[in-house]
Image (tube, rainbow over all chains, first blue to last red; front, side, top):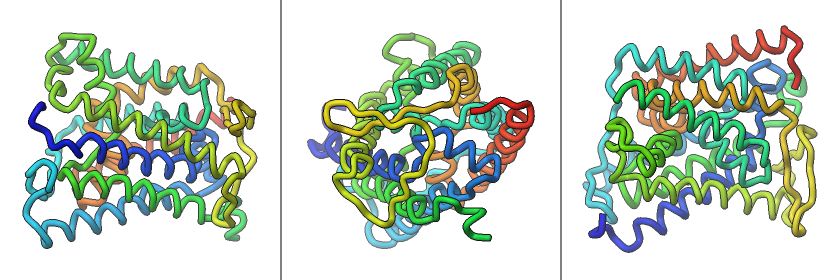
Length: 139
Length: 176
């Protein structure tokens, strides 16, 4: 950790700032707007998720063709595909129940705190408790 | 038809999505890391718990804290500029959800969704994203962007279950 490039942490911060600004601008930091999508009252949400996927997908595709490794870490630009197993479907379904009930997901919850939504601390507390329960059960 | 399906237009969603993607790209260019948001939950627990499940994230936990702080501060910057009216753009549709309030000269926002929904839903989100290996950013943005079949299966599953859940909750008369 100590041999990290001095710009590593500042770059993570800049990326997080842009990411969080985008979540605020898109209203994904508002659970009401996510629930409005899930109830088919406002179908804007896919423009956020798939729009972001397209932008990042272009970089994931192009960078390995431009250079071999990342300047700040030396890590190779490569697809890091998560292995598929039944946990992807089980976990996805459990996440879906939570997302459908609350209208909030982890990144949007952090951003929600940033736009002033103190009430979202209930969701963040729940997320940490949930993450702890599964970690305790699987350790 | 479009006004019914998109009562708030699409520009705020498209612009916001572009910025979310740009944030991922900035980090990926410099570090080669496709960053997701939910690992922060477990990596941060490693500061407080010796459980082996959390300890596997020790090497990444400090930058994940920085990433999350960035997300919070970026959203605050949005509140201080666009939400406060300091920057006005036709690409931004303010909508009418929740409650706006003023604090220290900044227009902030708070939700009307009931705390029990946020808390109970949050527990399911915390369990599910970690068992399912990712959330809306790790699977939905980075995974879909990588054309990962695993992530496409995860996204299809949580979208479908979330829609069913939200429709049932609404049908039971729970609002907001």
